[in-house]
Length: 413
Image 1 (cartoon, rainbow, N blue to C red):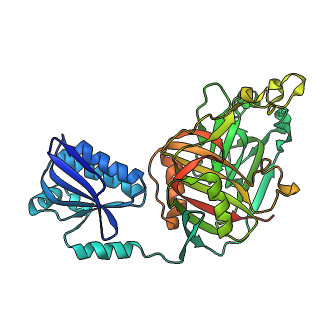
Image 2 (cartoon, rainbow, N blue to C red):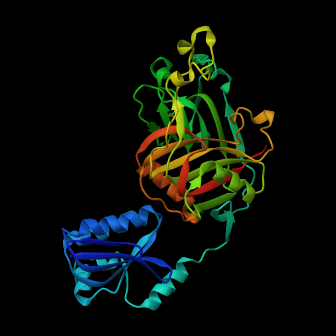
């Protein structure tokens, strides 16, 4: 037992573990007064990464519709992330209430301890999945015989330094020609109308997310469905990739949270290959990311064409963090990581100086994620289509993560 919550002695909640599954033992009555604390207890464990929760209800003597609502809401939330609630030892009276409401068909209800052991054993069966621990990070790895993917490069980053982009640099691309990538882009039909709205961009399974470089930005995005032949994404620069995932990994820290740079270095020790396109989703425990404040077009050039990265100009051009933020938000990022001793000249446009990874991340609202690597594609689609995007940033190496999943496409180098 790790914690006990009490509410006017009407309900005791005890966190424990049974047969390897996290359990919540509840004693008393669940009604409109006590149900909020039960809801918080379940939510806290889900936020910490638990996806299978056993609710020991042997000590419950009464439950109202308010209490039933808590269980239904928790089950819906958990199921979206590949988890579920398991109800244990319901009395005849409590089971009758669940049955009358039709909830006995929604929940797995068990009354024998052996059933818990069987469920625990079955839930741990994983086919073709290896487990490895590198640099205090625990990984599960699913490898497939995927071939070499394809890099895509349009435009050049050279004009960024001195804010030299113009309409002549514009590249319009169809969603059908893209899979995953990063760039500087905007949405719109007429360059004169959208030239002020370029910003950090991430392409996630054809979906477009941009954080315009304006004073009060908000994410603009496009989720193409069906025929997207008439949709165009407007880029100054784009570096992307296409192909099947050779590796899909889940990760979690052993003694705490995971630093993003440590994570990306660790995955290179687990994989063969020199260059990968990367897609990940994870729960943030402290984001460090930067984004443009203004669009690097000719009209915004510094006097004498000075660099936007110079000490005098940097703060005018970039939102750079002074502390971490966006705790418990869901991050979905894409980009590149390489395993060369130094970045080859042919890849200079893909990576910043002295870094072997370059990732743009969309920051979504708080939520929980399904860490089952066999459901990687489905979970990625769910997050990007259901959760609200808050910003898009150039990810920095001090970012801290709790748990998540990564897909890697091996690329020609």
